[in-house]
Length: 447
Picture (cartoon, rainbow, N blue to C red):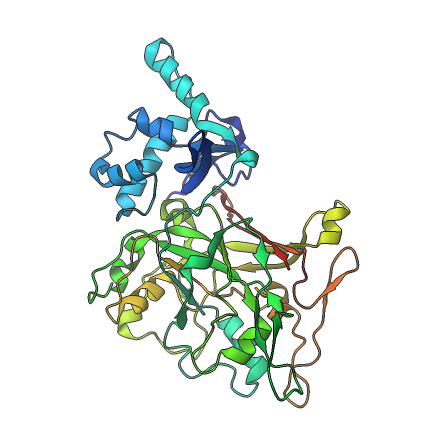
């Protein structure tokens, strides 16, 4: 199969080498606008160094002749990507129209050419000045545990003789999170309080978390769901994906350690989960599909209802950086602390969707499914501070004292301090392939 080309645009910044937001990407977003009546959101995308307001293009009728115009009508009317079910074919219509409108070439002369030039000017604004809402109306949120390396590392800290529980390699493990505390990237993260039980004490105490952590995750946004009682089979699971985004599932490790038994995460997770502003579509990610999921020698084959397709994984590179308050004051850039990949996850989003609905649970447009912390085999690719500062276990089987991370200012971290900004970046890159950027997911911890 021929490699996809990276089409050129009349917007020069979209044609620069390695541009994360070329015409090959065009992620889905909702941009914040303000007028005399207050703030509101408009459907948007990103191209080069510009934010693209789709409202002028919709009002000009650019999408009226799309094959799936009826499907797009309620979405355009409400300025909401997930107000109604939307198929991948309809999203492809939007992408095709935008690629045609922004393709390289002169707008021409005459009234139609002048109208095109006016639309070009009207829909663009500087990306650096844009503000964003959550890219979808996310009524439900489910967090999974799909990285076998993360599960093994965390299990080794508490069960060194049996890191993985017997069910892990047979079933996608997940829990229902709190959708009301999903926040857009850039929102301040308030340090949560809860009960903890310090080592050596007989009774718990109440107060701010002292072991606040981030979790590097990829999110999958649902485009259209299923009727209650009607599971989604693996052969159709990927059809229900609107696209992928970045997720930071902030975690209070000390609160979690005391409260999680017997029912799992509660206050340790419900205070905030950050979501990036851009949803990267499957059309944009198509060149980066890979065989999945990852399985090692001796791993059991998935049960029949979870058997994946030939290329259900995605090759996505991910970075985590930290910028402390002292670094910001000194004008220092963020410091990268880990680099990982999404390509060797043990469970795919298709499997997560199928298992999520196997009981008859109904997913809704806009539902967010997150991968769980993304870690790889290398110590430098671990997706949270709980793992990054873990220095293995001692002869007694218990974890050794944590090995702090050192920042450029000489500051040391085992967990996050107030004023720390955590920044996620992700992209797809390959020889002869267009770069696909996800933007950033960021948040600053405050007391």
